[in-house]
Length: 343
Picture 1 (tube, rainbow, N blue to C red):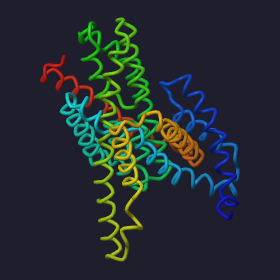
Picture 2: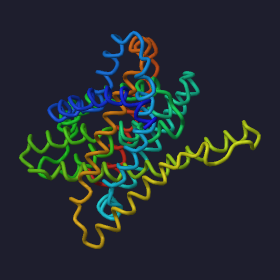
Picture 3: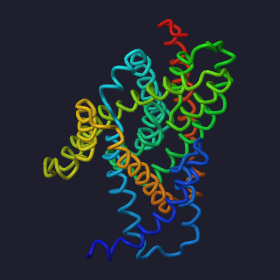
Picture 4: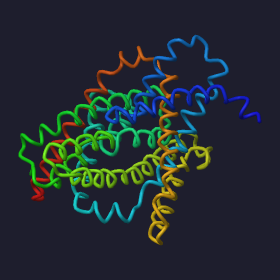
């Protein structure tokens, strides 16, 4: 009862932003519900002089609801199917992810970009955009403005990719009789699932390929999503060791280790086993939809805790980092496909 009394007003505001954002996101999938929610939150917070009773619920939503969203995200991963159908693109995925993370680290050191923003931009660029940022932010204890900064950067290059990649694919001479080559390219070089879908669907429409490109691109993209597991685990252990060192051993594993990542892995395993024994995938659809809504709710809360003017003032270096990661991933994806004879 005390929890409800303390948090209901802030959570209700986040829900009020999330519902229309989700509906608008379905109408404009290239932008997506999470981005709409975070922008709406940034604008609405300008008109709230004193958060007062709203603050606790907003904070709970941006932290805990975000973690619950990541756990539920695991129910959308069938590890067997992804590994089987994504095997062909696995070398490209590994190299593109490594490229983005290396670029982010080098620019973090060279341009003195804050470590948490660098991590979020590097992970978001290399794995799966907003979902990867959502999973990583609680692990490294990033604050709301750092999350908002990273989401904004990733969104910008998502839109560019969705618009430019079909034209680029035509110029580069990808096969117009098969969706294989461009599907792998879109799946490995575009950040967010919505933009992967947009670019692949455009290619299918341009050349009358049905859904061949889209099917390939989405499968490759889901294979990339699996990288959330090892990367967040590594980051979790780094954070845990650092906390133990700073506290001279006076900190417990339970205090600093983000156990929700283990629940995310458990959800993936449950889904994989259930589908293997013949349970319908439709059973997990409500959980996947709830995960998407929780992410939109959390993004609304993050927007409410973000100073849009500060975000604009400090956005230059992260945007340059995002561009470098984006260009690096695109170039490496093309080179790897050429090297492997897939293009």
